[in-house]
Image 1: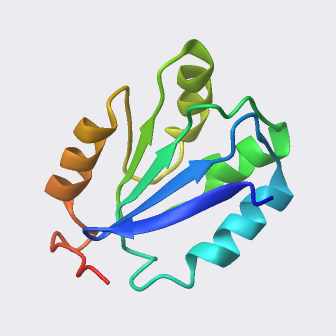
Image 2: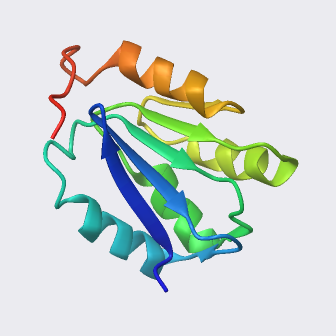
Length: 123
């Protein structure tokens, strides 16, 4: 069973983690290797659903804080665990915001576009 699924819709890469997943460096490495297969991945807006993630290890938190993505990153979640996880991730040098509503996150990601200010082509 995979730890996540990735969809590419309207120029946004969406990452949905498996319920109850424990995210460590190995899981982040697999995500990084998988996401590079999508067109324009390096500048694409990314939506990360934190719902149902239950733990991110300290080494993985350090990796997330050090990561710089050229496009914006929207994080979504609903509960206090999601907010705590997001608090670590938003410390990265990437343009990152936390939302409780995925529709609001998608609207923000679409409005801010890419690092160049131009929308990423879909597909």
